[in-house]
Amino acid sequence: MQLVIIADIDAAKGTSTTSELATEYADNVTFIECDVTNQESVEDTLGKAKDTYGRLDIISNNAGAMMENDPIGTINLNLCGVIRVAAVAMSYMRADKGGSGGIIINTASLTGVKPSYNCPAYCASKSGVIGFTRSFAMNPDFDLHKVRMNCLCPGMVDTPMIQGVLDEDGKEGRVLNFDRFRYAANLPQLKPSAVADVFIDLVENESKNGAAMLITVEGPPRDIEFPIY
Ligand SMILES: NC(=O)C1=CN([C@@H]2O[C@H](COP(=O)(O)OP(=O)(O)OC[C@H]3O[C@@H](n4cnc5c(N)ncnc54)[C@H](O)[C@@H]3O)[C@@H](O)[C@H]2O)C=CC1
Ligand SMILES: CCCCC/C=C\C=C\C(=O)C/C=C\C/C=C\CCCC(=O)O
Image (cartoon, rainbow, N blue to C red):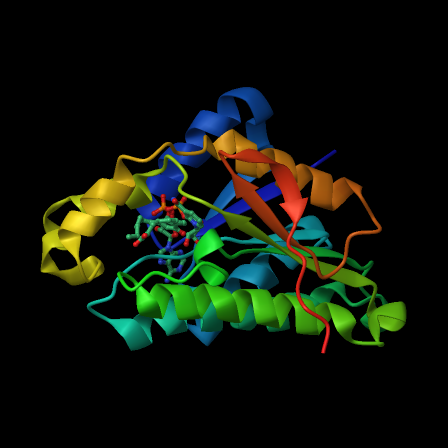
């Protein structure tokens, strides 16, 4: 049986999503309010998950936002949040410390490899997520801890994030050039299910470790190839 915990800072949205899923998955889905920028909140959330279900197998490190009006906050959420969650999750997942191994999948972005003058802090945070993922996965201790780490690099996805930038907040600086953003927001967008499909592939394909998966409307998903120095 697969058991899922949805953790999000938005308790109203998290609870309603969990209720929707409960119609199909009953009590197998639980919501916990969590702020990934807060160490105590992350420890509390993952501690509860471990206590409830006995172990952690799969972490989706997905929380993120675009807010160029707060560049340091952007790094703290999008990059430090990922690192914070991974560190606490590792303490439960490591096969050499009583866990069963597993996989952590971080959501980066196409902007992690394709720069945009419109959202430099966001791009930096996502480049950081890619660098963290690839570096973590190179650690020779993998043979001991048995936790794989990969990341997703989608282009624009049709989610509330785009609308969130387009609304009044956007005009107050979530992106640096609102007209350019409005143009970009009208380009073709991925469906969230296209990203979810790649997520499932990464879970199932045990040879994948340290991959950064490019997902765009232009073609099938593929591994990003990086230069070797
Ligand atoms: N929508 C897009 O075009 C793309 C999005 N992404 C990334 O995908 C991920 C998911 O974003 P979307 O679903 O598009 O946006 P979304 O805005 O619908 O979802 C982001 C979620 O993160 C949560 N969140 C924000 N701050 C948090 C915090 N401090 N602690 C815990 N949860 C927090 C929000 O409440 C929200 O539920 C993000 O990391 C985003 O950067 C990547 C590529 C493209
Ligand atoms: C101007 C940036 C668009 C902002 C849209 C809101 C959220 C997007 C999150 C992403 O991670 C988007 C991923 C890829 C965007 C790719 C191209 C956008 C073009 C940006 C530009 O040319 O300035």
